[in-house]
Length: 132
Image (cartoon, rainbow, N blue to C red; front, side):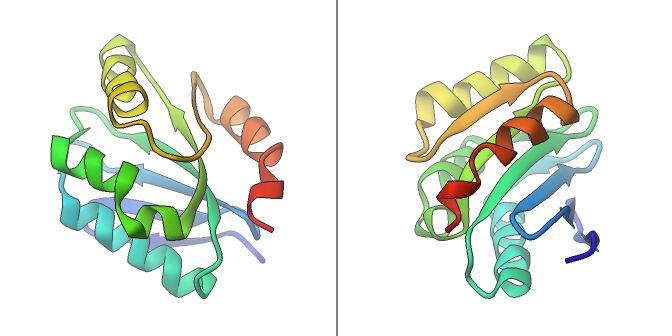
């Protein structure tokens, strides 16, 4: 699979390889449940229902609503489409928000936070067994 990117209203969904997808939520956006749902739908359409390893990053002045965080963590769609999450944190404020997602919402799948794309990708590659 060659790298392919889909531009959605709130994010860019890039299919890096057969198992790894990078979603980058655009600058100046409050991510809603609908935004997360559209991301899941884009992944499902490209992957024919096969789970992915998801790397997530957010732009400047972008955050997720509490409802969107809960949906991303616990919805049937999240369990159906995502095998593991790697969250790229760019600053302390973003790290706090990511900690809320990890510790409060406690997704039922492996999830880690990383300072950069390379370390996130390296960890996701160790999680490929979850996609099989």
